[in-house]
Amino acid sequence: AQSVAQPEDQVNVAEGNPLTVKCTYSVSGNPYLFWYVQYPNRGLQFLLKYITGDNLVKGSYGFEAEFNKSQTSFHLKKPSALVSDSALYFCAVRDMFGDKIIFGKGTRLHILP
Amino acid sequence: DTGVSQDPRHKITKRGQNVTFRCDPISEHNRLYWYRQTLGQGPEFLTYFQNEAQLEKSRLLSDRFSAERPKGSFSTLEIQRTEQGDSAMYLCASSLRELVRDEQFFGPGTRLTVL
Image (cartoon, rainbow over all chains, first blue to last red):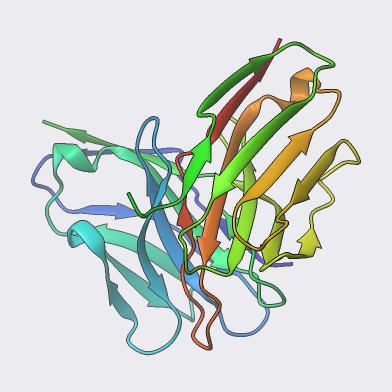
């Protein structure tokens, strides 16, 4: 069965510092990986995806993610955090047999001013 | 606004009542998905449609739940005889099925509270 794991419930980062939100995955076959962000009282917003190609994927709002096949990881990164980045972040994998998305439990990111 | 819309945004109901939610996808999208999100958890897949055909249903979707997409445009999700455990955020998403797998765009959700 396909799954993703987000080992950290919460990550605290000082504004201006680099941030990393961790994600590991388990899939059969080629992974289709995503990061979504959820702000309070708003729906999920797509940040970026990995389907194939370069291991470093660039997305919205200055975020990027590094795909590492040997470590089965897809960590979300940003070089310099903003207070406005504070939100709930979800890593997800597309089911290879259908099109549903399987989400991790989420990581709450707090950017401290 | 050309995004996914959901109505209502909030619904409070008493246990045992029926509720219906509506989702309007992005107009050119042919796939529509329903997810449920409870506090502290990621969204969980419920069901999805390609045009008007319901292609997959999760085991989470009990007999009290039914979803339709009668004309391949908007969709409704009905919960009959609601239970307190049904309290959750119900999310709708849409996508355009193409050769290259496309991302799903989510609506703001309908928050259901069952008293």
